[in-house]
Image 1: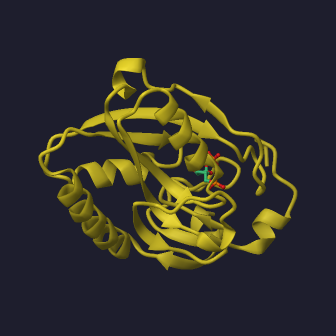
Image 2: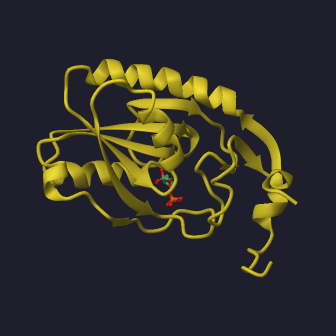
Length: 188
Ligand code: PRP
């Protein structure tokens, strides 16, 4: 039994993902050529995307992390918790590129942008792996995005359901039976 058994269909294969990221990396490189900037990876989901993205950007950059969590174990949004916020000197006067795995309702990145600007960032742009505009509630559009995705429960390439599936190398739609079923305990 592997994670693949829970996937209804593959939406983006590994190859498609890497060509999408090549394109976004070129756009980011053009935008920041000649300017200092910091990629801020929003954990946990963006760690896979951020690590592939930065290795395709051939100009100087710094890397920072923060954690934002709003979903808990379910499928609906809750309150936003921010942890590991970068230190003041990693924010003040800096050009920040917030990198996240998915822009869904938009509440997370909208709040993070406001918070980082409040803390003195010179500029805050956003780069997302997946954009799900059909779910948007907050007034935000990504500055860069690899793919637009329809309103399906997607997992893989960093995206989780109940903490799992992040390690799938592709993006897939989860079978309804998986998320409709009561969450299994650690013992299954
Ligand atoms: C997910 C995702 C984004 C956010 C997007 O994070 O990584 O940060 O939700 O949703 P929104 O646009 O509706 O705000 P999650 O809270 O699941 O944490 P994780 O990255 O640790 O999985």
